[in-house]
Image (tube, rainbow, N blue to C red; front, side, top):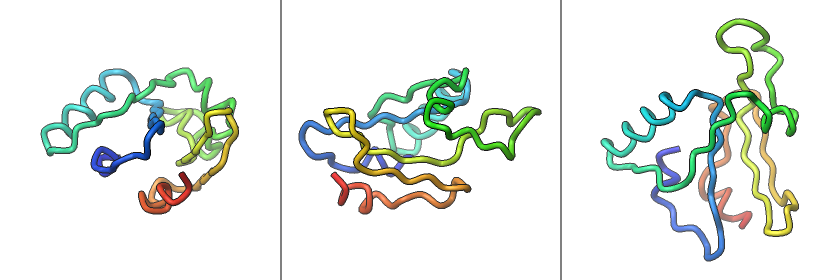
Length: 107
């Protein structure tokens, strides 16, 4: 996610990230990235109760119960100003995400 702070978004484009981790974990993440010279310049939204993840059907059933309950599939969406999803990428593992160039080419 740190590389997202380096990109120049097209005009009228907004970026958000959604996390299931608690506020203290998100604050730590932001602080660590700022220290490394990669400040998070976009809103990092908190979905601790899983409402957003559940509404998109992204809750990974492999993590049922225990401390990892509620972990979502790694997902990237581009939603246009009318609320239409124009790009969606859902991966079974966090390491299979679209590149920044791929995302930008969809804008």
